[in-house]
Amino acid sequence: MFGISSLSRPIHLAQALALVLGLGSCSAPSAIPRDTIRFDLAADPTTLDPLFLHPDAASVEQQVARLMFEPFIDLDPNGRPVPELLAVIPTRANGGISADDRTISYHLRPNVRWSDGVPLTSADALFTLHAILDPRNPVRSHEGYDLIDRAWTPDAHTIVFHLRRAWAPAVMTYFSYGFSPQFVLPAHVLLHEAPLAQAPFGSAPSVVDGPYRFVSWERGDRIELAANARFWRGRPRVAQLDLRIVTDPETNLVLLRSGQVDWNLLAPVQWALVRGTPGLDFVRVPTAVVAGISINTSHPPLDDARVRRAIAMSIDRAGITRRITLGNYVVTNMIQPQFSWAFDPSVREPAFDPAGADALFDAAGWRRGGDGMRVKNGKSLELVYVAFPETASGVRIAAEVQAELRSRGVAVEIKSISNAQLFLPVTGTLATGNYDLAYVPWTMGADPDDSSILGCGAPSNYMRWCNRDVDALERDALAAASQAQRAAIYARIARIVAVQVPIIYLFNAQYIYAYRHRLRGFHPNAFLPTWNAYAWALSF
Image 1 (cartoon, rainbow, N blue to C red):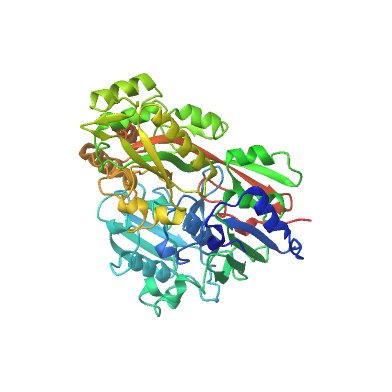
Image 2: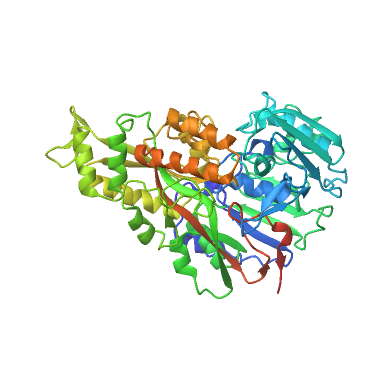
């Protein structure tokens, strides 16, 4: 229907409405199916194999993976850990974690079967661990998994990991919401599909353990899933899921208002348009998404902290929250979400201060010329700002930042890069560093570990920023014995970042989802709206 190819240029509201209603043709809107939930994805996945998940602003591949695969541990909407594949979450008290924190025993539920009827066992978890660590598999990150020096399976429902050293995020990271989420895979299927990166499983995962099983994938158009009759919680009450790939926010909004989708994430400006709409309910969700402006410190003059601080002082972050997010997204100053036990409200990045920004630009040698624009050694201060068009808020933020920096004498060219292209590993815009400033929503894991973003050479260190003091502190935080110790270390890291400003933090998003009255059990958590799809139901 509305594939990526049909959205190469923006579709305005009237055009989108015409598409939905079939105006200008004899077709009529499709009837609302009584046994199907329909929703949109902001991009087409690159793979359906969770081993090779790629990050993006909307966590598209993770959303889809969570419909078909189960983690060890999930989090409910209140942030409480919930054992999924596990019978119990390992702790010292229950004997699941050794006294030195280096041995973790995971006990799997005994009643879980793959969708083809084969029991899910510890052998599947061990196979997946080996697949994650196999250098032939282009897994995005081995973070944490590479600390496992021994793994064994005492019985069919127990797997034990021994670590080279204690690693604080371990329990909530392995096969759960880590920096690079992983799910247990069916060994009996994938043993015969090597090499895994080219395996048919990536485009048609034939065997799953989640609430829904794979039916079809029309690339750029839709993914269809059906209820898994062998799901360990019981067959889901909704028979089918119809996931459409719709990259344009305006089209998404029209589909929601016309009843063509059952739920959708709203930009704050969209919520202002649809609140009060008959047939729609709304839920606000504190999220692990922290949005900011990544500054490419490998590009002069952005390697100068004075210039970075001047840019930060040129941007009215509170004004962006007020005008663009309508106060729904709260200004933040560190990478940990504000609900995290590691968040420190006393940390402050440079405040909006145009006069102070001018002074810093001048001190760095970038002075205004006759036209008011800044010049140094005959070269103008010109920056490239990249943003992805799939986010209504991000597009408006780009324009506001451009205007604010221009008033400080800095020329900014905005480049629109698709969500998929922006976040592609190796060849994507962020990975190649082909930008100066970039709007990036980082999704944190269940643990506050931020070394994957702020560590030297880390996978999501799009800023190309390296601070040896921060690197040392990151190692200390991962080895610390208590939450209080770790929280104090993350605050120290945040204060260094606030001075050096490789990232200008904008806000910690509080998402607003709209859903139709007929949809029951829709309760997104801080990471995904699809985490509890097994509980979704339809009423009429």
